[in-house]
View 1 (tube, helix red, strand yellow):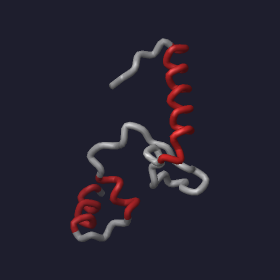
View 2 (cartoon, rainbow, N blue to C red):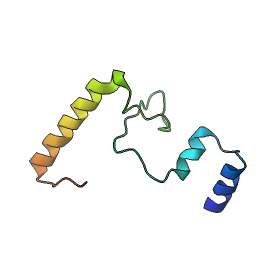
View 3 (tube, rainbow, N blue to C red):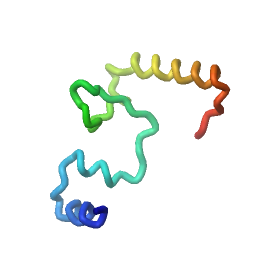
Length: 74
């Protein structure tokens, strides 16, 4: 299947969403509006209007790490 996807990519026949399959690296943080983007195509993590939400989720993650004594992985 991956060979076919690469061939379609070379022929410029993939949609924006389909091209995501070929990304070599993913964003460090991802934030999606699942109501309006259920297929998680548009990452909102860098959107200025989502800064408050991202900060809140970061804080919750930090608390969870401390509470569960999980070391962070970089």
